[in-house]
Length: 332
View 1 (cartoon, rainbow, N blue to C red):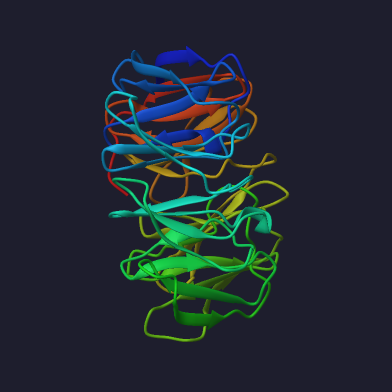
View 2: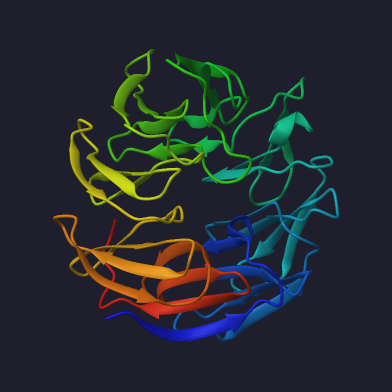
């Protein structure tokens, strides 16, 4: 059974881009200018610091928390355990995107306002900066470097994390769907990535192939965001409401969830199947055959859903952060 474990008022509208959840940490922006690190088990405050207004991105990488506030042209690096300032960088106005991997942070490229630049995760020292102000969807870190792609463009590039040189280019069968915030590239669990093309298609990018491979094409227009991969399945949320679920290996349709509201972007593995939520405040438990086994109204509006081992499910609502017990959280 789903049950609310704790709730924290944010005193502002919740934003998915201003929330970071990992196995050990919950970090959320609240009260206009504050960033709070919470204890996942009970929601108590570990630290609370001023960072500025409405972060465009909050990312936890290792022992660091990276933040780009809207009202200052700075990239802030905090100690995720204490909230203490580690270093600050100046990537330019409206940098927007943050992607981190190992010891490199890639920043910039949002709407083409600032050139991409890479800095050292530990010191903030500049490693390289692109010459041009190219636009990209939110970059994704891979074992070899970072994936980039211009929203509406016909290709995706893999660049080297150390110097920014191009390693691979994939050509797409349709325009890249790159949401203004949130991911565009989703790991497929086999070393590749899943990418949305146009209104209905999902393609796979494989390191060994130079051409994108079509995984699935939906019967109806999909929501303008990345797909979700969970439990060996790919979840295709539809613009009109409901969701089609396909096999991640070959795109075979497994089942449909008919619903008159739109689902939020995340799917989480729980005991007995999966947890999904709609924008109207309903939380669902779906079994391995696609049947709804539990349905409960948690709140009036849900904006995001995350899984967290100690909290259970973390729900971002219109004005608060909720932790909901789920009968045991599984791994993705």
